[in-house]
Image (cartoon, rainbow, N blue to C red; front, side):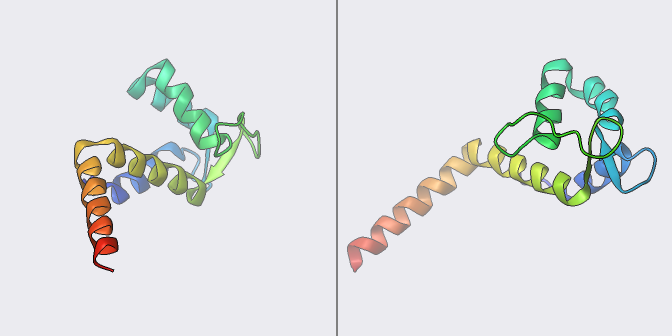
Length: 109
């Protein structure tokens, strides 16, 4: 979760946007995700990108089975990246340090 992912995600969005309209559609992303992640992970990723924040069904807005802009794409990938980091060993260690520091500060007051 510490790699410089911002550039990667921007380029990934541009690769998914095959018709250069500034929007990514389900159709544009499906083939690439299937080749990269396999069917199960592809479906999960498509639902996260094009569905509701709570895992709601896919919203078919726009053309080609549903489209999202870069802001929506970025929100989803940044949230997922933070989730992966928080679940990593380093993320858990940092959270524990933060809890201890907060508890120590509360004791001193």
